[in-house]
Length: 195
Image (cartoon, rainbow, N blue to C red; front, side):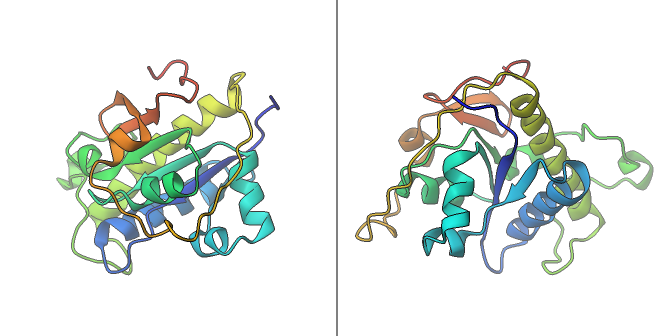
């Protein structure tokens, strides 16, 4: 097992959904502002197309998935590709919680809600994205700063099942709850200090 130097982040890729925009906004916050150089966004199209650098990113580094809604497409994509994420952040349950990051949410009476704007999140959407980004950053820091026993994975791409959708993603991936909206596959190493 190698030392983990980078964490891949796969944000929801839903088109036309506000929560998918929140997921991508959060991923950019993590990779550009919070942990630049230590995190990298996974590009689904390049991954499915088998681009060598994108395949290497998810095979050689632990991945945190940001699922935007109940469809949980990010988790399903990784399941179909035979990959296990290190952790998954599901936005809807986190949107119901009070923020953990330092913000002026109370002063503005702004909640962690997705808002109605898709292209550029509204103030509440930005707050929710920052909360999601903070959760992803915390997971990434645990992985980067501990002896996370990551075993490199091998992508398996069966063209006949790439669009196979199932109803119960958490059961199929064997997600174990860590906290509200944060899970990891039972077969993946635990996240010290978070469980």
